[in-house]
Length: 64
Image (cartoon, rainbow, N blue to C red; front, side, top):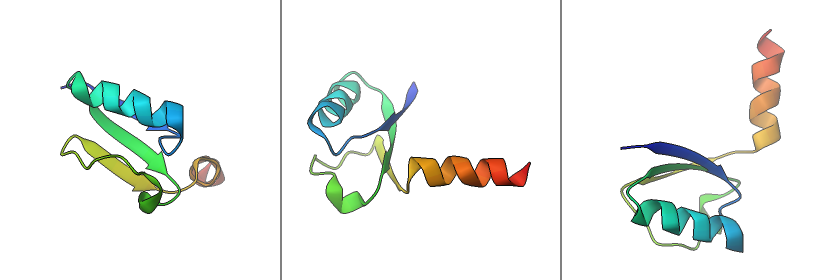
């Protein structure tokens, strides 16, 4: 199974991309600020990760 990382799934475009990916058999890992912000259906192939994209990158760069 192919895995895809998606941001912005609480918006109209992002939500529709996720729906299409799941229908086509992808495992989707999605970054959301709050899990409650995603109004789509739960799916065993959808993994929601709470956080902020900028914060995640800043933590990576602080290590080096």
